[in-house]
Image (cartoon, rainbow, N blue to C red; front, side, top):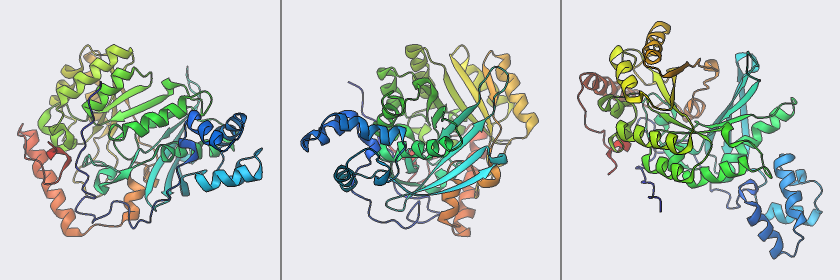
Length: 418
């Protein structure tokens, strides 16, 4: 029996922003999303109404092949069945979308409005074919409204936590992108759970969404084309290992030393870095799949020679790959992205230790394509006094961490959870 996943405090928003992480809300539509049903659940719903089993295949084809958005898109079904489905389910859980393009149209940032007026984001990134690699269309999706972890370099962390997404609300982000790609004669090739939220704190819905996306009778994406990211929720990582999935596990590490990671990833106080990496190492051994480690590069904070050496020692000999990502500009954070030479020096140190490294180029900066930036923009500017307090606290905490001191957790932070 796998251990339950502990819950982090979900107190709402960063105090700099106010009581709600995504603005005014409305009552949520109580109808479940049609795309969140398993084939067995759909067949059972039809059977209760005395309908033939083949209707389930027709409904599934409309949802997954036809990427239906409205009841009228459920083609091939009798009018009364379409009406019954519309009364019982939402054909699409996304009420409205706003799309912003960047990088010559290769990056699309999408803001999704849900039935209760909550906002979540997805980002579609198009990669052209190059030596030895086919063209790819990768979608980064959200698993929660906001996030409880509160990483200070992340715009979503500034918003605080709203709620978990339903399975259909997760997969409908994928269906939305697939519709737009289909209009261009293209097909989605990769899905990464690296948008808003901590996927392993909404693990049941995330696993159900992955099941739908990788089911050949539904979306039909290969499991190895799915990546699930975590900030280090160790019980969730252990549960994934027990299930033995073939998708890629990514760990948002950002620091190899506990004092610094306490500041950058507050839940490090519950699951320290060595425990997180041990769980990832066990996952790699059990599945044979390389673990990807994400390291956001912050000038003068975690890009030093000391940090590179610590990370190299932590991962030496592991089935692992490190992605170095210059920090996206985030309002109200006192830090800047590492420059190119600092990133390359860090990468060279890891490579010298035999660790594979990729230096990521940030995409879509002119449209706020980093996680949570559009939703944060819609949430409005927090009070200047609160911003000033937050910046001063981060400066003090990071200075203490660079001296090797572990500062106390901020009141109400994820790191306080016991």
